[in-house]
Amino acid sequence: MPSAAAPFSDARRAALFVLAVTAWRVATLAFDRTDLWVDEAQYWLWSQNLDWGYFSKPPLIAFWLRAVTDLAGSDHQFWIRVSGPLLHAVTAGLIGLTAARLYGGNTGPWAAALYATLPLVAVGSWQFSTDTVMLPFFALGLLAWTHLRVDRSISWALILGMAAGMGMLGKYAAIYLPLLLALAALAVPSARIAWRDAALAAATALATVSPNLLWNLRNGGTTFRHVAEDNARLGETALDPAAGAEFLASQFAVFGPVLLLALLFVLVTFPRRGPESRALVLLSLPVVLLMTFQAARAGAYANWAATAYVAGTALAAATLGPRLLKVSLALGLAFTVALPLAYMAADRLTLPDGTLLARRYVGPEAMSDAIADTARAEGLSVVVATRRDVIADLFHAHAGSELAFYAPPPSGKPESYYEQTFALPQSYAGDLLYVAIEPPDCPQARDVGSHAPGTGVHRNRPQGFWRMPASCLRP
Image (cartoon, rainbow, N blue to C red; front, side, top):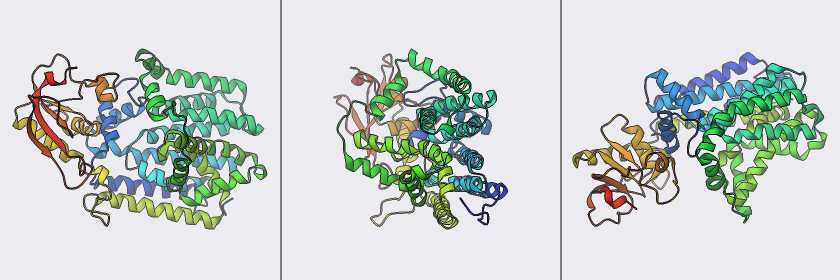
């Protein structure tokens, strides 16, 4: 357990540290030189069309962004991203409280400080995502569990259920919370909560998430099908051990090398650990192992194990000695400071081959402006774009303009939110601007330009512009 002489010997110091890190992130966002990433632009569009579910995600992020941008009176990317650092600061505080209840001493302050500087959190405090809105509820659920494992409590049972339900409204990965709590209860007697509290929490979680469940029932299970077929790819059966190893290696960058080694060390020494640590192992590492298997089976993004590091941070803070805690914090803090500086110079900072370091986040708005300028020059008011990233930015960059943006009508089931909700209406019969990499199969199409930037996300995928009648897009 961390020494009492360590830098975070009390909650006040840790709180000041987390606030300072959060202030740095908020301040540097005002000077960020990147454009909205495709998913951020899509979440913003959802916030303009509120519903209880969407093609690829549950709805909490849309409601959250709508509240923030309405309060700010602006849809500027700063306001779309600014609550990210604040939500992660809340998550850090909740993890600190959880660690303090389980271990006492200054483990809680250290856990809060470590979480605030995780590489995962540094990226999530800049790029707004469903993980960011889900993790505070996941952390709140774990805190409620630390109370319920000691005393029966209707209020904490309600909080646990609400946290689980709200977490699932943020991202379906929050389903790991009740599943992992059940696993811990099976293996560690002191992790169990009263049956009454468990039933009340389950009922509350079900009631909280029920609007999204009902939405999926009314919409053919759209989100569930996307998660199962497009993300998890449940039909895949072949295994690629190299892909699994690559995913596991990526977790050293997501969580930090020192902290992940600490978790793996606790796993190896599991029988010798106290009940609190054994419970936290079961509340964290199964997600990493499951996602490693998923990566080997059908692929997985590095952030898909994010829920593991809520309990994992508390466990690492309780496991490492003062020296390794300081090393881990120093590494995390260096990345925390450097990342915003990199994005403040995103349009200038290049790799040795001349490619922008942040190329994925530079250029979407320039592409949108070129498309809008071409449409206006041609006297057109309708734009059809084939790429999801292009149409996503068009909606945000030219919101409120006279231009209307659509995806091509799908030939089968919709493959994106845009095909599902913003497919070109069958009733439209005029000319339109068609935006794609490849020319359309339309004899009446007339080439009216292109945008081929020399840098940024569209560097190797220039978009061509064609004027053509809408009838060319009819099945």
